[in-house]
Length: 358
Image (cartoon, rainbow, N blue to C red; front, side, top):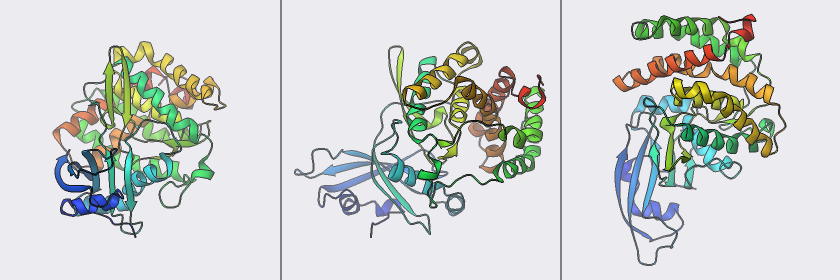
């Protein structure tokens, strides 16, 4: 049976050697924490390697193990958070071409949710949700998403897994609207004094129309990242071009591909950059799908993209009410809400329901 390390102390040289099928190659390990570990604990592992270690064995790995916080672990178990990330690397990494870290060990206990991931250290600068990104970063983000969506386009029944990648519940839209409406008053109370009234108007409108909007989606399901934003990406920049590596697959699910694009573009680009380039980025995404063999029209991609513009505001409302409040977290949710509310207005998502602008 594959072993699972759930604490830093269990990530020993002997464990890592065994996990990588190179007994004795790792003679020592030093672990350094990465980030805050609210969902899972991420660690940089500096390895002391033996003289006869395999030549492709890196001296630095990244490990992910369950959060040391019991409440976070229970929430992850309930929402299949750990199952999704391990499942992506174990079952889908070989199917898709989206750039992601190379994983060398991915094991989970299906019942408890205990897991261990060992992966190569990815290179690049972490995206900054608050600062936003350049057009070249956004372009790289769009191109990378094609590598996730196209290989899984229309294959939901084939790729579905009871363990982590489940088909959408037919009542899911109604449930999402109910959850959103339950959490909306708390969002309004906390953020109404720091956000323009138009953002609150858009948030209330979404609460009244979310289920109806989701019923209008046209495109087939594919695998989406589900939290496709700058904080979950690394960028290597050379001149005017960028290459992205996508991290943190705990929210992978079946949905419509343009949802990731609308979420990433709307949250990443500042207003003056998004407005003149948004349409071209959507067309670039569609062209990438066509080039990868997907059969879809630009009109349908734009239509579902327009619906996808509500995803960022929805995420800001819900996530701000269910995670521990922090100063940076509240700043990020406020920025997301304002950027995506304006994105909804610019794309006139209201017309899909009412036949005219809000």
